[in-house]
Image 1 (tube, rainbow, N blue to C red):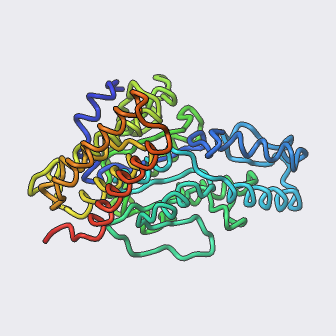
Image 2: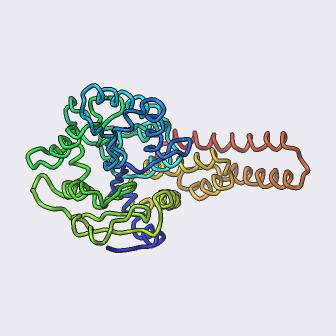
Image 3: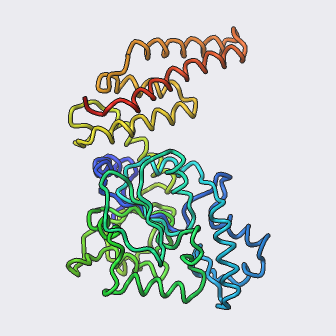
Length: 376
């Protein structure tokens, strides 16, 4: 098991991220809602208020999968309804916005919530969503240009897809692990292409994790084991005595999940802003490079980080045909209005109006970039 600092890892692998060689796996312990509450705790709070008898019957040995000890069909139906209602109501926390802007080949979510899909939709970022739907045929097409999002343990909009009983759970695993039952073609495709698995929010010492990783590492076309690297963080490591059970090579980072995502976002943004005919780290897709850069500028503008937005636009000005003169003017306006406000020479209202004008000017540049072809 190799241990790396976050800075060394990013220096070594930003190129691989940009080339979409990574698949992100989000486990049942990952993620917080807009209110900052862990998703699993949010479900428990909801059940505590609305279905306390069901909550008492949940088997806690299955992480944040809500599986009933009592398989009574009526209780199962009630739990499916409650979970479907609450999962659909969850609004994503800020970290999801950072995740969907990163160029992962695919994101595989091991919860039924729709927070990732909502974030993709809200930001109008193209993606392909593959829900776990027992009645839906597997897709035989796969686009290289978008991130693939898989809800491996169910789709909150489809109550029948939710895993709420032991029978549901073991039926899922038998299907997943069977040599005769292949994964959906779309999921097979992205797994064949990936070299690195980034595992966030898992308890890798659970008995079923070696089974999942074994299947993911297996090439269904040749029935052989593939060589992959699995990236872990300090908040979800694997015990040394269990490492041999997991058929993969581990790299453990000296960072937690949120720090890793934020540092990756920072590195990708910096590389995307670098000029050059071949793009950052040798990437040839100019459209993807421009999109990542514009997304980062928009994020700075939304967060009132106008100095950072201007700096990023200036770095990319020559490549994308941005008016440097306008940026230099706005850079001077920003420095001037902030200096006047800090010295108490202007009140908040005129300060706000000036900041709004600068923000509007930068937003117009972003609109120009959105509509401009990546290559002339």
